[in-house]
Length: 294
Image (cartoon, rainbow, N blue to C red; front, side, top):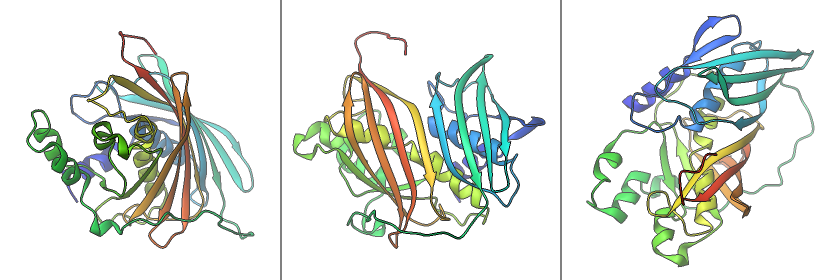
């Protein structure tokens, strides 16, 4: 287990400071705002800590309200909205500087038998082991260009293998522009069997590339295009048990963008083709003209 994954697991081990009140921190690195996947994952941990072990999260609906400040802890207040015989509902508010930066509703369900079908088919893409890591793929594009070496050499908690062009590639080659992205990912270490942990880690990874899928549709790229973006809301549905330390294919598409907003959808499949997670996110996408408040 590399240091980045150890650090992430430590970030997800929230401190309980009162009944239904938890505190989380951010990585000690120079970033302007807290990564949205981190806030969603920590909020889900907080909600899960208040639910009986026989109930598993099946959906969450969240709004990113303000940028998170990485320099101070985040307080997560959990409201026990309902505890029914088979479902439990929780509402979480993440607070910094006395203001809400994020809200989430999550629903938990006792496992039951029922009719089952899967109409979604996993896209046909190369096996992850045949693809370069994200760092190697990007290094082949940028080489030793100034500013990239230190960033690419940093350890990461998630091993991501792109079966689609990077936004950086499409910004240089318009023929690669597409509204679809396919990325394999896994946490490259043997993790505990806790089902909530694997769901939380999928929630963390789910926010990495959805906005990129919107950018890819326009040939835009972070750092090389005059663009700023941020997640606005995020919804996830967890269909069946899975492991985040096994390869998952994150198949994403952007069906629409306009009015400084864009929509992206994603589906996570196991390597055997089982659909385990569905995701939808709306994001803000703006051309940088001035210091425009959100």
